[in-house]
Length: 114
Image (cartoon, rainbow, N blue to C red):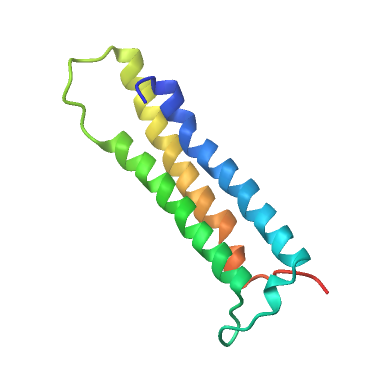
């Protein structure tokens, strides 16, 4: 991704896609009764799937952030482009905290209501 504005919004695009996907899987899993299988003390196949999806979404945002932090070895950039790259880094950090905070509920909240 070469355009700095696309790089600035990419982390929150990943967050929003993960948000929609996680809650679509949660709703589908509840309607198909995936939460009733017991694999341990409190673990069900649905919870394991949601936790896996949460970890994958956090990892995707971390990859975007690491790509933004990678030093640029090409020609010098303009002051505006440098500013937008700095903003993109802060936006990605905010997306990382948002992703980690919003999706931790799949670990401890009740999956499906009775």
